[in-house]
Length: 399
Image 1 (cartoon, rainbow, N blue to C red):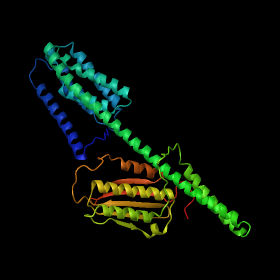
Image 2 (image 1 turned 120 degrees about the vertical axis):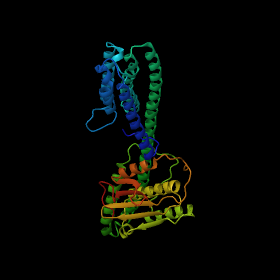
Image 3 (image 1 turned 180 degrees about the vertical axis):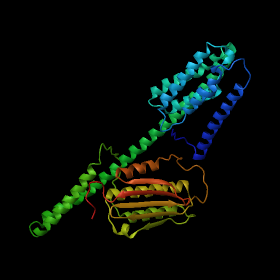
Image 4 (image 1 turned 90 degrees about the horizontal axis):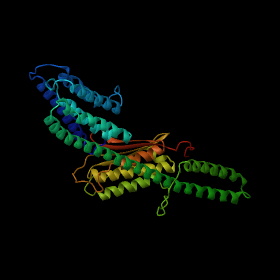
């Protein structure tokens, strides 16, 4: 169970602890009722306390050894309905309701409606569980218990159905938002690649015209020009393979390749100007990063990573110290954006807390066969790290 609820980890742990405490206290109540003296200790009296109730609780968590949630839920519901059917043929004095069993069935209804896939499976599984819950008052075979217990269980069942459906709708909206961000980021990446291809084609045309010009007067310069054209054509072909079903906006402006360090320096400087009361952001680049050249796709993606990371710092941790680190090795370009905690607390950031910007960054970086990670460090700072191959997969190394 991995619901992306809009709560902090502490709140989620508190909710889990409260659920466990409710189950334990309910089982204690079952044991207290069982200790009351009765004329007979028939199996229908202790089965809900020691068998059906605990088994229903064991069906709640997911483990590597348990079957699917649907199988567990249906099995528990059938077991409960079967026990209720047996209670119809014995004395009402020798039966027990089973409070733990009831609460576990209600929790299962919430889990099934919120999590089971596909939707029709969740619907009929929830209906079977609801039937098991509503049949529980029949174990006492009295009109008062059926009316009173049925009313209470109907209200509780309605609340559980509402909670389960709400969680399912919340998760569906989150999944749609994630897909929209990924789709938009793929379109943005494809547009960037398209603009960079235009840059390659311009270079190829210039080189071809130069070769035609010097063909008669300096034939020895034609071969290097043709080699450069072939190399540019290969790079362009590799970029073209990434352009799949691209929808280009009419208002989109062309992206021109620029020097990565210069652009990052301007970006960091602008970020520092926007936070006059905070320590100036710092850009660090290793010697390998300063002296190396990278493919245009890689430079654009690294620029977008730093841009989004600085935007998140400005929104969520204003006033903190920020360091942008660029490093390179023979195969990879690494970029790290680290910030300390906010020096001042702010309210809800402008635009809300969607948490989808990092998803777009991951999509962009992984589209170039890179790796992306973000999270807190051991020193209590927040770090965004991306590693991208110096050249896209299948493309020749950049000189």
